[in-house]
Length: 95
View 1 (cartoon, one colour):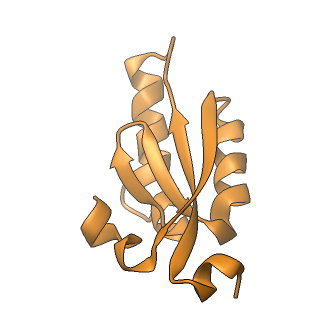
View 2 (spheres, one colour; view 1 turned 90 degrees about the horizontal axis):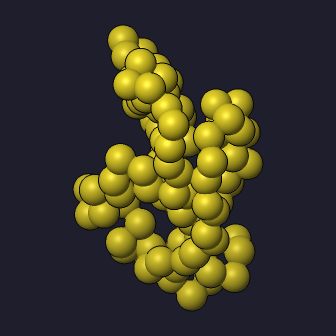
């Protein structure tokens, strides 16, 4: 357990990414890889929580995986580490 869990918090990484200069086709392909199309997307694999079309919360243990995913798409992103109360760190509440 990490220190945040000991006090009732969960560690997440918030990623804000943008599609400046991307075509509609590129965005569609990215969203298929992100959310899945006919199979699971990266969001399901990393247990990510989508806050908006360009903001994603990722649990601590999957932050590097998601960074690699975004970098493989050559997408600009901003990473912000954060902790939130464990009771709020669920898909049903934040989405």
